[in-house]
Length: 389
Image (cartoon, rainbow, N blue to C red):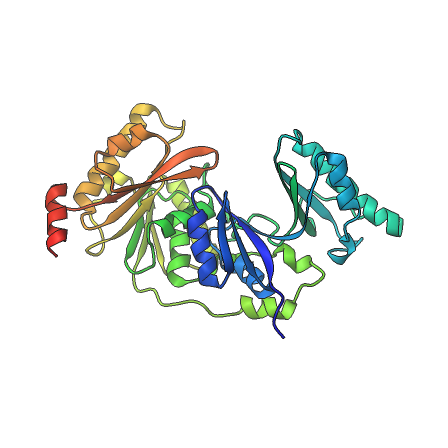
């Protein structure tokens, strides 16, 4: 008997939609279509479980369960009061509601959230004389309502907490890189574990850890204690156990290095690497970018997210980027380097010509992810040598 196929929506960060779509295709998704910070696809329950376990650039996996048109909150309330909620969860379970609104008809998403909660509670109360409880933190059931103009899509959120919360992070530095963004940067940079990797400003170790997970083909969701679908009425514990226990790890013959000027950051990174079980593959050291004088191997990939906020004075910030550019040019010959930063003037102080740039969002900051091919001599000579080869 063929498993039932249904539509799913994978949410992601702006700029990572195509990377996520490729991941979904490789995982076996059908009818893959890119949207705004999202990817639509079809698959069965097995694929939904695998998507939560394996997708590196997804924030959450939503399962649409109803769609309707409405022009005001009262119409949404009536649709949802009549919805068959008890087929999805029971009175004894707690729930929370998240609403996303892009509409001229609805000005207050918070008010709409309250109306959705009322509709659910009243639906149960009319049938059983009791209502399930709302819980804002760690509820059993996560419900998502998306409103675009007057079209409403009701979804069950199969992930629960955002999938960027892998579960391996014990501690973090002041401004840690989102794990989904880190994985997306690595995949955009073409990282596949076939070379050495270095992040010379690694902070709490997010990029080295995500690089190791990709290189070893370890599912990022393997560290999670729980997914929301495990509380659903149709949860298949045997199927999920089979997928969770599946051995996907592959051999990794190279090295991953991380360094940072802050000894505290390296101490935090070491705890996170240990928590992820990756100590064998990731080598960390407290070292300023200016003090890196040699590399291991004849080439590799460098990906880094230097500071670009308000914590450094402009003159110190610009000096940091000048030092990064100087080390790239003199130490990392033969490497491909990718740098994420918000400020164009920071890139200017690197002093090297980039060969590609990709717009990305880091939180609410508009950033660029720039590629530098590090070679000896001038760009024209470099291109000539490659044309002749």
